[in-house]
Image (cartoon, rainbow, N blue to C red; front, side, top):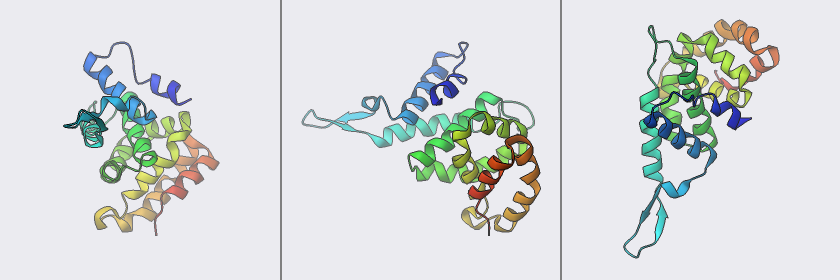
Length: 178
């Protein structure tokens, strides 16, 4: 299911740079091709270079975190990339990416609610990580704590409409607000 989901972001009209970005993103998500990120020490031994791998991911994240359409609207393809980063940050325990997403994901959701929820419905494995990162916005760096309960109240209906009651409740359970 994961590979099928990822294939929809890799359209044939991609530039070679974009294809390389997808290769890097998917390789890191699937934890394959780790030999792409190594360095050779003075004795000629190869070692993993996690910083190089992170810097590559960070470059792709920065490239895709801005809307690609007017009025802060994300195309479905770009939104999936951002949501895959959320999945990656959770599964790989990437604190840096989790922090980025704590600040970035909620405003993206607010401008792209229907597309965001459509993707969660289509790719339910993304639900826990993305709902968690939505909730992380409330209280991130001591900001917006008081807005968390109101966010849940204001969005419960649209969650239920697009995700169904069970998945909406599951998403809300990941948005931990006091």
